[in-house]
Image (cartoon, rainbow, N blue to C red; front, top):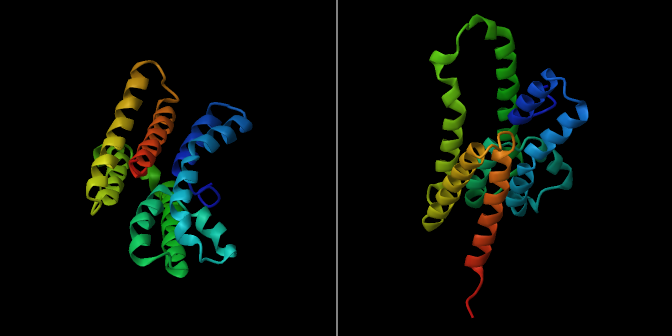
Length: 192
């Protein structure tokens, strides 16, 4: 699955839904909705890919992950989207993903208790690091991005406490992303 589906959240959701006996259509629809964020990431990076040959775009798109987006969104404004370099970065990342999956399958049974390794902390820490990486050298925009991220976390938590236990993250993400775009558009409007 790691070779064909290069999306960790999609894999985790698919496996848990499959184990629960959910229908394949429900699994496809759920993973589609969860991965709609890739449309926003693609839209943000698309201006840098205008000069690329059309045949290369699907290869870039297949390997666009949260981590690759974090790296490229900082790198592209400075160096441009050099096709060979960009695709090599993405391919190395996917190779590491597939190798990590193989390693987990092969050696995963050797570790009886993963709690001492702090793996439950690793994923949130990675996303915090991606956020910090995005905010570096952004000046005043960093304050807005931080506020949006904090608001999304708070809204997701409030929705969870209100009983929205399966859709809280998705609803918070859609609401916060919409408000962020509206606020950014409002800021850019010339005053009359």
